[in-house]
Image 1 (cartoon, protein in one colour):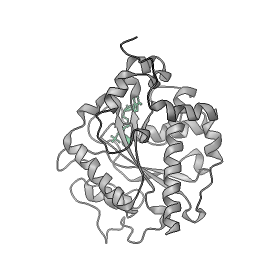
Image 2 (cartoon, rainbow, N blue to C red):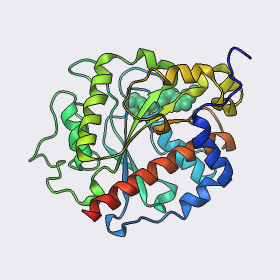
Image 3 (spheres, rainbow, N blue to C red):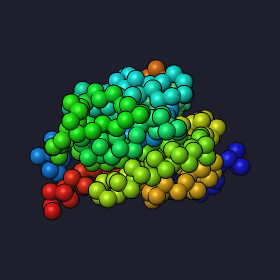
Length: 278
Ligand SMILES: Nc1nc2c(ncn2[C@@H]2O[C@H](COP(=O)(O)OP(=O)(O)OP(=O)(O)O)[C@@H](O)[C@H]2O)c(=O)[nH]1
Ligand SMILES: [Mg+2]
């Protein structure tokens, strides 16, 4: 126990305690109003390696809001090639909330596998239409019926979420890291805020698996996060355990999921407000 947990809580405390303090973060999010109504909705896109838990995160957010287990975004039963291959917008809480998620194909290694950089960038700029099936060999281009040449503000991405599995951080290949970097660079050029949602924390540390509150103290998690040079500050690395085998909702899981979501939604809203200020 002593070797696994530190006596002093580390940085995640800051984020999680805020939610504990609010008691019901979903109450706050349910009442959330866009600073700029004209945008219609905030669009959040999830990128990350195959099997990182992108689709599961969308389902987890939905579960936390609806108070029951749902399966909006289809989840893979095992790792391999990307399970999600089409560009899909997911509304949360039956569409009553002013933010949506886009689930994209996973970042895979190999020239002819996974989503292409060009498509990642088109996605950020809002050029990809709903239900586009990614082609790992050729990017979507202007003229294709799934290419939106003039995206509205609500079609563009307002927050980039890099989904990284805590248990496999060291196994994420350079090729995948480079793909993530190029998305990050493009997002930075556009001023789009970025966070890392760190999934699979239950698999990365047995003490966290035993009790999610140990996320505050887990040395194993801290060690995994520290060398992770993903270019986002520590307070933008948001740990979650996604719903994956549970049959009912769990308050501790919801707190982490909704704490992450609160950060994401506020970053996205601030970004949109800054665009309208210009
Ligand atoms: N233990 C655990 N399993 C998880 C977690 N998140 C996701 N999983 C499982 O990991 C597997 C992959 O999850 P997905 O959500 O399909 O991953 P993805 O990133 O959408 O994968 P692709 O669409 O193939 O790129 C599934 O079997 C999930 O049930 C987590 O936090 N903890
Ligand atoms: Mg998926």
